[in-house]
Image 1: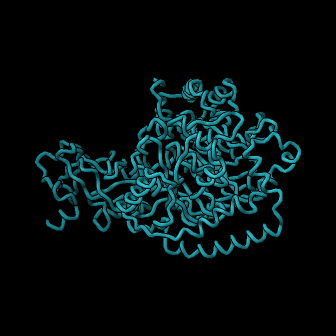
Image 2: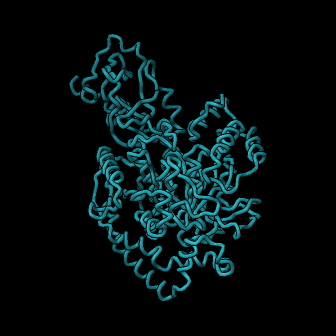
Image 3: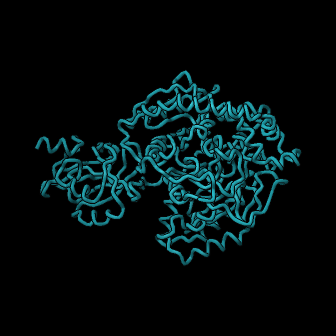
Length: 603
């Protein structure tokens, strides 16, 4: 039965684990078989021995999958992150060392039940957005090997997209955790700086570095963030998660989304990307968001500071001793870039810092007029041959929408947003100021579902929308209501008393019939799934219900009503009220009204 496992997303594996028809040892054997078939794509630098991987899976046999949050989920780490007993190379064999301790972020994941598979290929010293600057081979795009995978976290992104792991860790200084996600149809989460410990990570620019998370969907990425966002007092750059909003969803109606002004957009001749970004903006508007153009000139100036300013000297400082002693060991392009930092003076560093502060002050008012920002993750994609012929300039183009993020202290998540005519993926990034990480989660998930891209290279279907939101630390799920439980109606107090909050209003897919069950007191509707040919869209409210109170809530629902899966107009699936079909025989059909409120106003 385990051979039927396809997508390794959290939801599907977890359901199989909880039903006891799948074991972690089954999953890692599937993973190892898949890896054998993908060895020519330069995804890995070090794979753990099979014996180690299987032993780690076996150790979970007496553990409860309900207790460990990442139980049985295979993962990978970029090879600039330490794992005790295995070399860290940063894609430079002469630099390699054997760490005695693992990076804290890795220890946390393993303690949460995740199973480490190996360490992935990368642009050397995390310098590049292309994935081709490695002596371990040029990592191939998961969709077309002629194209770049994106970098520097190349192997980490491709491993997730190809279904070799459930999630992976990369790093992100200039876009390395977002650009490869965009190019491989997966999610790349770059949390606020310092939220995830960078101790045990080979630095690029230590003041800017972030550990990033790759996953097949938004919910999975944020589940990993939930686990690893632990303050590390031994990391001088660690910050406590002082979240400005722990609510990962806002009512999408009325959200103000900032986007680059039309004249500021740069697609470098890629008309497919230009078209797909316009479609993403249309999706935002259809979800009820208000689009507001933003002058991107100061953002672009900040972006230029990263590689044209003194932060290149910080890259030199990170590996100064090694660079000075063994300069011939570096990839030629990496040597050229990092070597440019040697002659930068302290005066130039202060001048750039002053200018950065001025630009931050210029940009500050933007956030008073918008809730979050949306932009292409990259303006285009290139073939490996194109990058080889023009490695520095084309790489800089890829950082157009990413290089400014950490300098401005923003959080962000890259999500799939469509496909070019040649079937290569396109991605968009949603960003917000530091510690608004959870504020952008829900809207990012909505847009991913709206784009209908599926997940990864196989385009696996997204799992049911089981949104787990954080409200003052409580885990919640989303429930669709269509009748007496709606705002202001007689049974709404049953939700309010259990701490539920309204997320937004929406409609179901045009696949339902709607009936008035007038024998109930108060009367209630019966919503029954039908075919698209005779179905209607029904007005709904989405409510966030604390999981701890959900059981007692559904225990009070009388037959023939119950909780099932409801398809929304955007194609996503949520839990909601449904009715057994036998109960609507002879009931009044109010499908054409499509609204319980309209019905009761006419009664």
